[in-house]
Image (tube, rainbow, N blue to C red):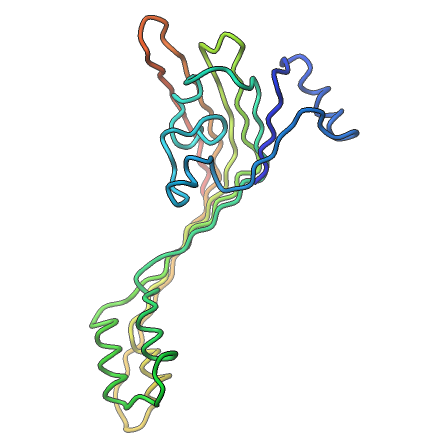
Length: 218
């Protein structure tokens, strides 16, 4: 992820500033490395309701008008996040079957470990990849309102498998026996264009925000 924060440029000079940045490099720009905001990193990569700037587009758009105006315009380029999980990733079972055993396991021991791991059901592996090529937010000097725009692509995949394949690899086909092998996989991808608007009420310590999206399935 690249986050570029420009100190108080006006919208009228934004295009000229981009051209100047491309030719000569930024005069007052900062970059931050990470999937999301600092607050989100503290929660292990989760989305934080305290995020501000472009990170607030996908978590809490009301935060676009919370706090003082530190930067009028914030631009974030190519934020990439990838996550994996699922109950197939139980490394204690991998260790017992392939790593920690100093002597070869018997067929009965391997069978017991597989039954303990899988039982009669499938274990699943899930992956999630998110790419945000562009996200930007703008807040005027008054700080009473803020707006933002973001483009994001997401791919979500899940796969499941029963113990049959590992049973075949570990125990072989002798003696003759039935080895049911079942697996499935499904995935979907989307591209969304998200806008956001936030307004800070003068009479109350309250900011409200909306964040509509247009989602295209791939």
